Length: 567
Image 1: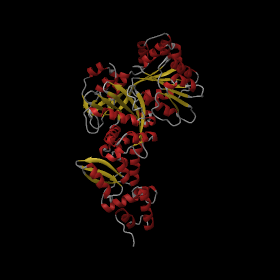
Image 2: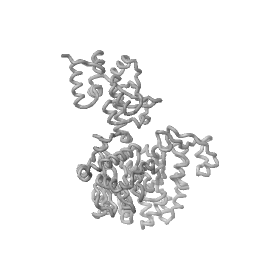
Image 3: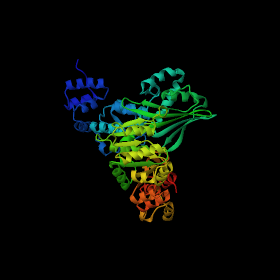
Image 4: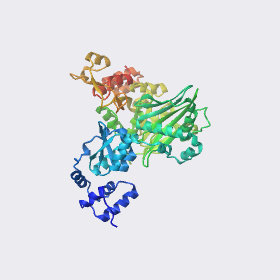
């Protein structure tokens, strides 16, 4: 009995795009690979995707939409389920009124439209696109864009079965928790996935006497997300400690751990976990480690053109020291990893000492500091210098011994990158002096100091203009040279695509090269005010000035600049 054909296969045969034998073979192979038939045919060059799209457009009377003109940043994140998109090769594009419009290469695929309709709770309508373009867009969204991790949705069964990538953790997961803790497993897994979806950097699990609080840090600001019953405090902490391979019996001292959560066949997310005994139980904080920051281009960080050029020039020096400074959470690690990514070539030997190693960088020799075993920054640096390094990164200069070894490395033909915790570039010099480093060593080894902060970006969908009098702008710190005739500033409004009018963050920088005149001030024992004044005369933009320029560019608001820079 001859097989019956309908839908896609019928269209292919009717227009003689393939023969029966090819169709039968392709249907079987596509089923084995668990991918849509059209995707299989296009990926294997069995049919011409553009030709098929035009055939469908004529057959069904549907205009052909060019996906190349669509900005994938505008995709409706609430309806982007990675599994569903890949399973059906169908991509939600936008919502208009009560309809969800789906880009699809096969308009006869009613199953896909019905499944999206059921899960979205609204009617769906097909938008015909070229399958090849569609596959490229899906790949760009879910494989290249780190925010794609934020769109995976899971039902209860999937949440319960989320895997830990470490086999030992998986064993612990099965053996340490009984079936009574299944709701705890689902609840925590859901929180982890929600944090990824919302772009959080940290999760806080906090026990109190009469309540329990869960908060996410999103774009630098903490938001309360949930408040489970206080009696679940110990069970929530135990679950998190099991996942991160901590000792669940030890509740008296702080512990550190790590979770590697497998969320799909191709993607895993790392969490750095810290427990702290408090009055009413253990507070657990998880830091989400996003490996995509290592691949970020320097142009994405927010440097002004002259600041970026200065950083890139100093990265290409064969020796010297680049110091990045700022408080915790100001983006220092991102700046350093971006610099390392630029330097990471087969011709260079790069070694890093980090506490802890947050992101794995292929081609870089990374050392995890272990104070208990006697492996600190200074001992790691001494070992690096015996291993023919070209570039050395020290996670943080905390003491005189580490500072002296780092400076010695910078003076003997190595490029050294490191961080300190100070408020400005000039104060970094006085901090090193206070540690006991001689001024002549600082002047001869340090080549560039970058002070930085992170400010929230205004949401491009809802930011609205605000009028600010010139007099007020001058009081805020603007120079008249910065202001055009009618400067336009924006304030946050808030919409369904952002958090309180902001979405994402941008760096604000002060990049201070150590010039001859600044070097003379350092060797004369000058203070941070003298160094800062000289840098300003040489055209170095302060953190405040750089922040105000970001507001003038419409990237952030004046209120946000006031929040993150001192005035």
